[in-house]
Length: 95
Image (cartoon, rainbow, N blue to C red; front, side):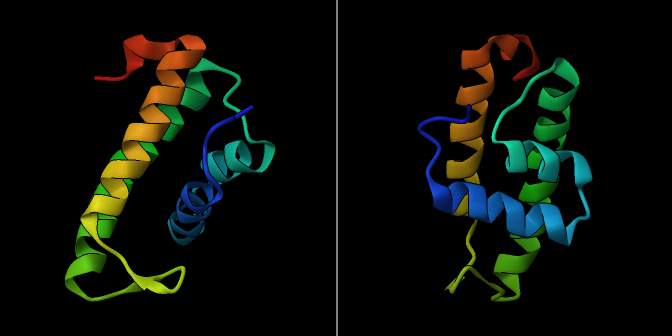
């Protein structure tokens, strides 16, 4: 289980996973767990795409979950999710 991952982080990821049509990440978020190295890689790839999109969205004052999105949101999400991926044994994937 993706324990200790607060709902706003899951919601933020869900918003962008839907926006980017990332079925693999939506699946992980729905079941709230990463169960394979492939899923871990998919989530890490998604995080790097997320950074690009949030950067663009913040320049355009896009509102996500009732607040203007900013790049520090992504940094927090990435830190939390990368820590989780390391915790479950895929630290070799996190650079």
